[in-house]
Image (cartoon, rainbow, N blue to C red):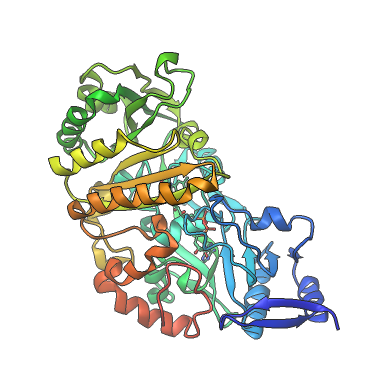
Length: 472
Ligand SMILES: Cc1cc2nc3c(=O)[nH]c(=O)nc-3n(C[C@H](O)[C@H](O)[C@H](O)COP(=O)(O)OP(=O)(O)OC[C@H]3O[C@@H](n4cnc5c(N)ncnc54)[C@H](O)[C@@H]3O)c2cc1C
């Protein structure tokens, strides 16, 4: 009898009869794809080209019932199971070699209720799709800064972006979720129903089940916001960072300023002589009144001798996509990230030293500004742990050729190791590679045992293991 060999959670391979695959395909509204099928390669391709894996079987889900069918099938056959939302996770957990993949990317509906200021979002939606639907009502959800990222993975790990200092993390705005559990049942999680699961979903990643629907609270914003970049020559980086350290602490929650050090991309507003030269960029956005934002940003815009200053009113949707051209899918990427509560001189000197010797034109060192509303949520309220941090560094290693993998990952690691003594020791699961799984217990700190207990309750056999895994 014909069939497929598929990898199991035990690391073995199991034969699945064609009749079982046909029955699965018949039972779902979406598609079941096997290697070689039309759409198979597109479904298994994720943002980070360093991850090139070939699942034995892909179920493309169109609805919650398809997720139930897929999870039930994986459990019945003991299959290794990967779950793909937007496919952006740097660790590549969305796809596995030889096992089964649930591809949720066709589930893209975003329904906004302007009266209650809420949105019900399916797990395949990207941030661009969330922004488009919410901004149609001049509402917004705090999400990340690259619009092709998936809402599902972003939310389950925490989620922060330009509006988080004002509105909190994405999870701080999660009202409820529908979850398909390892048993193949569907449960609702909110403050009233399954509050333990609701706690764990907010920062605990995809460990406890597959979310088929998220309900979020929204905030009035836009359609225009004060936002933009101030670009400086890199020669002045150390002084600029020292200025930033003091300036950032004066900012109201309405305003966020992030720092990017990289080679200047050939953007039309940058004079040509600066293209591909090292620069330091202040990227700013104000969630509130533009006049107040202008006032708050004035010292930044007056400081030093910038190459250009393009801060002004921009559409919020446009600003949310401003960095997309620098973060396109298909390149090789390796990240290292650290959390900081302060920016002492030693750290700034380390960052400037590294930024001056970045190995390629697409590398960048990002310093995101957090704090504000994020820090006012008690740490025990959600599984997301480190709310004390004020800055998060992400070393974006990014390049074309596989032959550069070893040298470029080593460069990123070296910078991380040099910066780590200045960090809180915390970490963001959404920025961590597969090799960092050993840090999970320390990152979750006091919450770790509670997460283990929750895992034992909802997924004792660890069906959902392709993530920053909480072992039952
Ligand atoms: C260019 C870029 C910019 C980024 N910027 C930011 C930023 O500004 N702020 C920020 O907070 N993060 C940011 N991130 C990180 C981002 O939050 C993570 O990469 C996140 O995991 C992406 O979610 P996804 O659905 O696209 O990923 P996927 O790779 O599809 O999934 C990530 C993880 O979530 C699990 N998962 C996905 N969907 C579900 C579901 N429905 N139910 C259960 N588990 C599920 C997957 O199994 C996997 O383990 C950025 C990432 C990239 C690549």
